Amino acid sequence: MNVIYIVGPTLLIAVVLAAVWLDRRNVPVALGAGILFGRDGTR
Image (tube, rainbow, N blue to C red; front, side):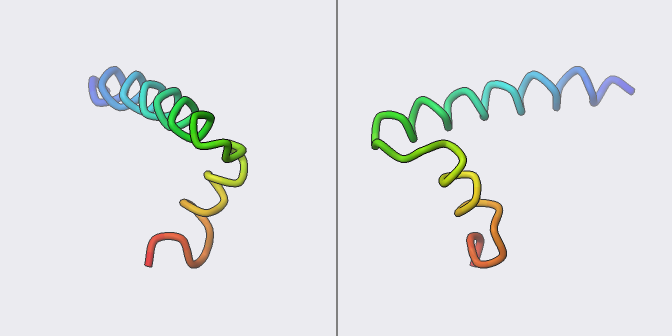
């Protein structure tokens, strides 16, 4: 149960940092998420 208190905030921080990083490179966040989590994104 304590894992939720570690994973939740870590995931939230990662999403915010990814949004800032993608915004600086003029990439829409939805496109960046699609590339990362898409079928061919992690190969």
